[in-house]
Amino acid sequence: MSDLGADLPAAAAALSAEDRAGLVNALKDKLQLLAGQHVDILETLSPPVRQRVEVLRDIQSQHDELEAKFLEERAQLEAKYQKLYEPLYTKRYEIVNGVVEVEGVTNEAAVEEESGASEGKGVPNFWLTAMKTNEILTDEITERDEGALKYLKDIKWCRIDNPKGFKLEFCFDSNPYFKNSVLTKTYHMIDEDDPILEKAIGTEIEWHPGKCLTQKVEELQNLMEHDYDIGSTIRDKIIPHASGSRAQPGKDQPTERPPECKQQ
Image (tube, rainbow, N blue to C red; front, side):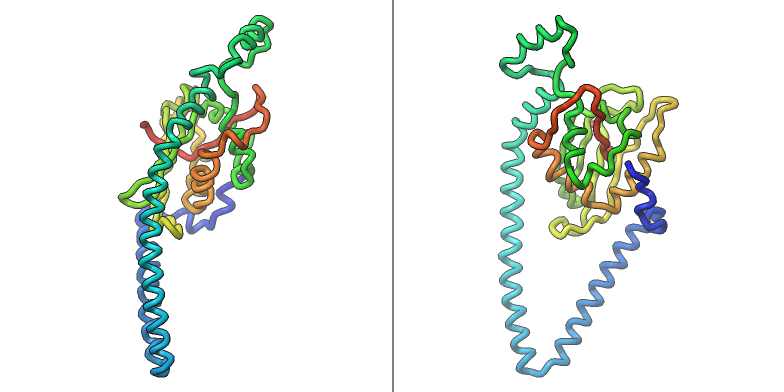
């Protein structure tokens, strides 16, 4: 990753969870104050203009009711199709990680193994390649990340309701860097549809002796706490479209860098 810490305002990066909660409450209070000022402004209008504005407000209320129904139906539709996607994601996982072989490859693989030309099972560096072809994520991946990230097997996401938000899960094979098999990054939203990020929480990584990359991970955590684009890009672009964004894989290609995740 690039020097992520330099991209953040020093004060924001240093805020504790309590400080961030206080900042969020202060913003809410400010919005309420502005709403009160809006009422005061209406009182300064002439009666005819005020009456027109009141009608416009009624129209806006009708729009808001329709929008609420839209958002409710959209959430139901997303949930429906998320269930339909799951079997496809399972098949993708099995092929990428060599759990199953695709039709027509078995005989060719046997010939390659005899000649010593085989790359092994699955698709090497699948997730890294998918992330590196995304314009938002590609600059965040450097050679420094490749050692641990080549063990990444899958990326998943799920919606959470209390509080509103979503969770990313990064699934790893056994590796010499950390003990966790799954690292998570959970995004709590103030307004999921705008969206406004309240905070992001990552799994504590259990490092193997001498393998701690703490400084790098903290930089990534800070970035993702203040940059919603990273998490939403992984959720909306990488996970559903990883197979369509791949370049030709190579055995020596690096693998991708996740935020942090937790045991399933």
